[in-house]
Amino acid sequence: MQVSQYYTPTNGGVRDDSTNETYNTCVSRQAICDKDRDVSVTETCGDKDNVKKNNMPNGNGVCSSERTVGTILAGPGENRRLIYFDVKAFFEDQPHIKSIGKDHNMSFRISGDAQIMRDILKAHGFVEMPCQTRYNNFSWLGNSISELCIDQLLCYQSINHFVGSTTLTRKDKLYKNISKMKIKAGAANFDFIPTSFVLPREMGKFKRYYEKHPGPFIVKPTGLSRGRGVYLIGKPKDIVNPSEDQVVSKYIQNPLLIDGYKVDLRIYVLVTSFDPLVIYIYQEGLTRFATVKYKKSHKNLHDLRMHLTNYSINVSSGNYIKNEDSTIEDFGSKWTLSALLRYLHANGVDTVALMQGIEDVIIKTILAAEKPIASGCRIYQRKPSNCFELFGFDIMLDDSYKPWLLEVNLSPSLVCTTPLDIKVKANMLCDLLNVVGLECYSKKKPKEGLNCIDVFCDYMHRTVGYFCVCIIRDEIRQLIYRHKKSKKFNKMMEPYKEQPGKSAEELHAIESKRAKHLCGMTSKDRGMVSRVRNEGTRCGGWVKIFPTVDSWSKYKEFMQYRTVKNVLLHQCLYPDK
Image (cartoon, rainbow, N blue to C red; front, side):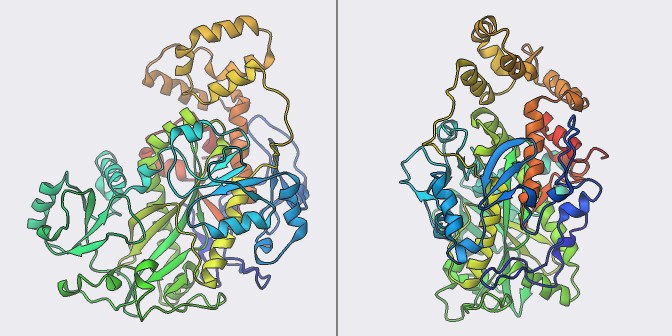
């Protein structure tokens, strides 16, 4: 993996637009790994369009020549105009920006603790709709969603979840998936999660482990977050309600301490696609402190404020220090990630290697849950732009600076209790919305009607590739007979030709062979590559960590869903690797 030079610990890591300043912490990894092949270049395999020099991204990661007030072009290869989200509109009223959303009749729905997202959208002219409303441009929901919800999304709609995201965020499923990867790829490659047991199914196994490896242990409910229901035990008999679904893990007794207090990190991770897999990490995060100094003793297991850093647990402590100044990032019970890196760097820690280790944990964790989520996307997701997901990775460092994965949060908290929260989360969310790309699409302005071929094309895109040909062969034959002269239909059928009922091994061989002939890509493949490439020109503070210049060689052995799209994307972005 290329050196994480964007983690230079010299300044803060996010824009503070309340003072209209930019903290230049980060040298974009894109610029490092793509120095010979810039991300803004329109080149896609088979395309030879010339690129104007003034199309280079500006300071906000947006091509200046493609900007108009409040909107941007999605980029080369995409015929879409997107709303541009400017964090200034959140901090101060910008009528000219708010008018853009109103002019395009943009709407949204929100559930959960996402007031800051609501304020950002309203600042850009979006109108909030009831949660039961189906026809809105953007949905930000706190809970996971069903397959039906994804299947019913229209072409212009975006939602903040994928089908099956809980495979990654439920503690029992997460541990189960990583355990499988340990068997498949070797325990040494996935040694970033403490030894854990899923109760009540593995109670006997846990008791046998305890006989050789005494406690303490930490017990967590499988489906709760924010420290709810978490407690520490010394022996198996101390477990409360052993028949309930819980995960019990070996407690890490040598945590990194700052002035005697435990800390953990909240890392924001964005996945814009699972097939192909595309992962971003935000350059800024949060460092959370416990409020009671750590003491390694079984007598203190009951004191959660010593062992847990969750805000909901520590806020009521008399030792909790609230930071009221967003320009001071290393004060109180919550710091920025940049502040911690500066502190560690000043104490001789290799922060580049530290962040590389954290990135490795994030990528491998997502790869462990990739297959079921990607399969669901391929079946139910109509358009690649329909779904994205923001995850909150909770990482703890031990006293040797080894990162340990504590949990992955679905819909990480957007509650802002301090100016520092507002600064970090407002910038992160505006940059996220720009990466995701919300299309300027007014449902009140009808588009050209869909014919039967459009409907069939939509169905094909929502069905598992080649196998749908076998399932609806009769319908296909009728459509071919009726529309055999249709160029659109023939173009649509290109990826599915000469694909009779074959085994998975045969299909994989065909996909691998197809990947070697990039000039034969379909328009859909080229659109996929263009979309990912264009995301990089709008990324702001988000940095792509997968795929990168060396990700295929480093992680392909861990990929359970090595589809043709993953191969094509990597070879198009990094053809020399």
